[in-house]
Length: 430
Ligand code: PMP
Image 1 (cartoon, rainbow, N blue to C red):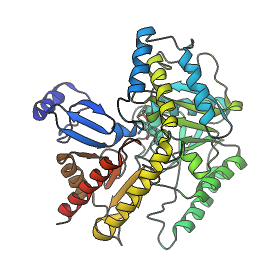
Image 2 (tube, rainbow, N blue to C red):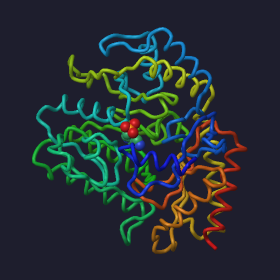
Image 3 (cartoon, helix red, strand yellow):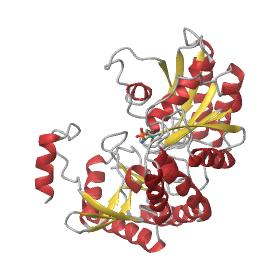
Image 4 (cartoon, rainbow, N blue to C red):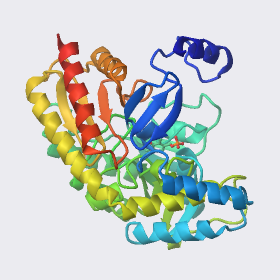
């Protein structure tokens, strides 16, 4: 089955890697945190399908809402409302960090980031610059690729806006001779310096992920978040927090911004908000709500089926207490992984919070040399045994194993996934 599908894919799909991807599955069914391939094999899904099923896959409440909306009206032009659109907007504002009281919808995280950038430039028409961090990931549209790492320059033509790359502190690999705290302080000083004098014109916005996802699960200290807020306030720079990956309960709070006490001017959401349907958007302070008619209307920008599914999904995330469940599962998983770290020399670092869990594999705990081939072997062996872990072969570091299942995974499935991880680590370390 699989070999045939790979051969057909290479013939016809634009996005098929040239060498083929032997781990690629053809999925036919999903329920909660389980998926099945064409041959009927069952897997525990620790990726939540690109970290987007925060609520388990095919939740009946979401499917019902989508079917009901499909029967009524599938599509409405972007200048019209549907009832669910207003309900979802009000619900999101009610759970948003303080002060964010306007919502804009679109279908992809990349487009939501572009919406946030457009909003920033609309509010600072004199500015051409937007500040971004090293190892950032903000999407795969041309503009958001330019904002991400590695910087593709202007391979796709002239890009607007111009991205000003800022250094970031590193909690696992601070600058030589510095503690993580000192590294954070020094990086904040450098950032302040760059933003004050390092540009040819004003900076409209600074955008970053509260925990960098695809760039390697790089977290920051509370001091960093507060320091950046201070710098942005001082210099009149809009602070955009990209919560496409961290939002909707993933980190054990509704938003990572809540977890760290960040006060964004604009928050970008996506992935988990649609309950498995494409949906994303922006929450912004009222004073920035400055779109003019025509600025940001996409044909399917507020696609009614996605919005109806999203309304059911966000309600379910709240009703089922999934933020607390993610926090509890995350504590359990990190505790088990820390215990494994005492037995497995490959585990250099264990990262959380919530179910944004990962381990970084290293060949040597002192030099922290990335164990990339080993990580890939772990991923492959686990998949053979029916557990799909997240890895980052195509984005960021290739030596992370990510444990990011749906937030409502059962404790049994989570325990089984970690047992399998333990076994395959032993095998790879042989
Ligand atoms: N921002 C972040 C932080 C992301 O992780 C992603 C997706 N991995 C995006 C933006 C882009 O989202 P999408 O793939 O839905 O365009």
